[in-house]
Image (tube, rainbow, N blue to C red; front, side, top):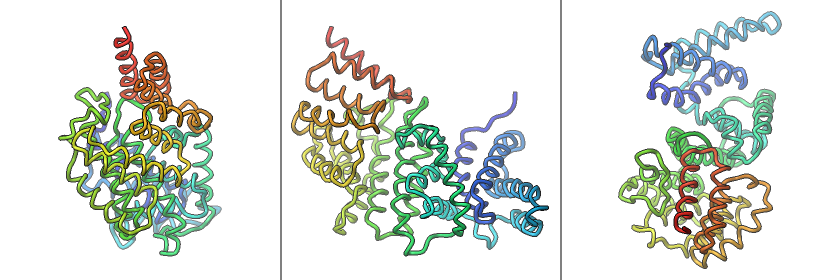
Length: 415
């Protein structure tokens, strides 16, 4: 039986992949070929490291292997493109990945901004960065975008071609360029975090490697732009939300809803940092969507008990957020907040408009929210039906199990 990577090595490869891609991109400026070379290097590591042991400098090892793959690629084109000199030079550099060529963790941040440059549409930039930096599969990205997987695959392919054709250098954007790219960059990090916080598919509710990577990258962006309130708001939102991670699952990985979580398990260090960040950001006067979401997360985190939650304030914030954003998930949360303040009938009325929103067609969360509000209203039969619908639509096993458990619980109550 062939050896396999242990969990530590798998985590290391995921962490290093965007750094290595950034390093290779810096030297070769060919996104598609660089990504292929890095993928081959990752496969080589997965094959060789279990047999030969972890190299002293895993990142340097991956960069060197990827650079050799790129050298092979250019050699095959040498007769037509006369690239022998470039190949020799690049291959030589690959032996010393930490030389003056500047290979380092900052390459990951540069890679994000590269993926979000103006040659791409916002949707394509987000999809490409999730794939190249976040390591999400095409199916996971499609779920995040609420679009078909084939559409995402085409979008990513076109994005790579556009980057290659644009000729934009691999470097941090200028101050003037930041504004045009920052919105897409923040949305990318937001989606990566969300995929890590609640995985769209698979046996685990949480993919902490993704959420932690999103937090790391958000910190990097915040360090570059410390006075941007929305950057601070996004980082605060991530910290305040991730603070609950230890309480969100039980001993067997089962989902524990917010109202039933052991709040003593929440990470108070992350809560304090998040509250400090969002308080400072809101004081700047220009309020954006990430700041509002962070403020809502802070209200939840600062409530000692579920019944202490200030739902009036949360409803007010979601009202502001819904006027800023056409996001159907915001509308779902607005319906929940409305039900908590004005009763389930008022919340259910807000859901009716979402039934016609194509972005939520076949999405489990609409059925799950409706089931919860129907249960609050006492309509157990309809609630059971909607819990079953939601369970059928989700591909995440702990979510499915939780929804089925809720339906079974209501059947027992009805009997």
